[in-house]
Every structure is written in structure tokens, then in C-alpha cells.
Amino acid sequence: MLVVISGLVTSVATGVSTQNTCTAEATYAGVCGSTNGTSVTVTGTQPAAQSPGSPSSSWSPSNSGTPGTSGAPVDTGPSELERCRADAGRARVCLEPRRRTEPSAPAPASAPAAPTISITDLVTLTPATATPTADPSNVGIAGLPTNFVTTASVHTRTGTLFGAPLTARFTPAGYDFIYGDGITVHTTTPGATWDALGQPQFTPTATSHSYTDRGIYDTTVTIHYTAEIDLGTGWIPLTGTLTIPGPTQQIRIYEAHTALVAHTCTEQPTAPGC
Image (tube, rainbow, N blue to C red; front, top):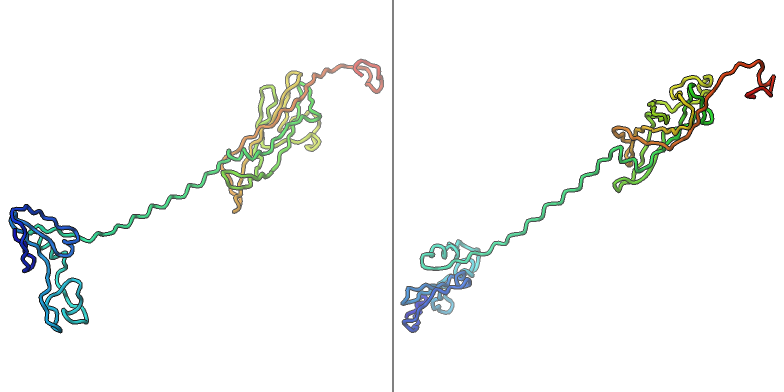
């Protein structure tokens, strides 16, 4: 077998099967072998003999500027990779420079949505409850109006909700008086005593109730609050109302009987009923 290297002849044993063993480095440098089964042709560049002081007669990719001189670079023609691709029919393997791919940055995580505060969430701040009282002294008379009064006012509570500090302001907007005999009356007033109203006792009021029978009754009052919250930027009203039931208050209802007498108890202290 005969190996030709740009005019340099080298003998190798014939009959040896030779494969194309171009390495990536050899291909990139422009030195690549091909075989037809009987001979191997290796393409490459070998400098010609030069006389001392004479300019270079060949050019290699490492040179810059005019061959044999120094100065500004000139057009050097197609690159080694382009020449390799043009010669691909001669079983050359062309090595392209590896392109570095930068990893794409991960998409930024979206911020969690702020929680929506509803008026029912404010129950954890414990708005004030109210207890009803019967005027006067939690007693009444069956068949006659019993006047009920409760105490409620605007108040604030501070606390933490969903991890954020806030202040809530509660305003009474309605009252449910539950009288304990199956009757409930809704009003927009907490009631007032007969004296405060300037009315005689046992006269009807906006919060009074008449019991049919004597006995002891468990009464309660439920307050309906509107609410506003302040997160540090001012008051924000919330939609709806918050229903807060109050504790139980027992009242006693008596029967009253009328009798005709000749004298008052002052006049006759020993009379029946005195």
C-alpha cells in the first residue's frame, strides 16, 4: 500500500485493510485520510524548502497579514471549515466549533395573592355582646308591656388577621330581642327606660313586650354590626353585617289581680293584701 502526504511518499505493507480514522483534531486541522482499499491519501500542508531570508512560500491558518511579511491582515480566503465542507465528497469529516448554549433563567415566581377579608372573618376579634334587662329590675306583669333595654355602642378591636395587624371598628346597626316565649322583635334601637323616654310605666315602647302568662323567661339580644377595618392606610368598610348573640338574662313575670277595697293600705295597714 502507498501513502501520499503532499508529495512525501511513504511505503506501507500492501494488503492491509485501512479504515478512515480521521480524528476530530486532524479534521479540524485540515489533515484527513481517505482510502480506496489499496492506497491511503492523506491531505495536508507541508512547507516547501526556503532559502535563508526568502519570504514564506506557503500560508497556514496561524499566519496573519501578508504571507512572509507583517502588517495589516488581508483576505485569506475560505476558512478551513469551509474548505473541509467543500471537500466532503472525499470522505472527510468536518468538525464544527461547539456552540455554547446558556441555560435559560427560570421564570420568576408570581407573588401570592393578597387574602380577601370578609366581615365574617372579624368574629375572631370578639366584638362586644349585650344583655337585655327588663325595666325595672327584670320583672314584669302578665298582660302589660314589659320594657326591654340593652346597651351597645361603637367600639374598636385590634388584632392580627392572615398574619397582618389591623384595627376593626364595629357599629351597631340592628337588634333582635328574643323574649323567651317564642317571640322575637327586630329593632334599630337598643331601647330606653320609661323615665328616659318620659313615659309612664307599663306603656308600650319600641322594645316592649307583653307576656300572656306568668313565669320565668330566658331572654337574649342579638346585635347586628357593620364593620370597618384599618390596615394602616385608613378605614375601609366591609360589606354585610356581623351577627353577635348575647348571653341569657332571666326575667320574672307576675300576675296582677285587682280588688275593690274600702280603704287604702295606708288607711288600713292590716287589710288583706297590705
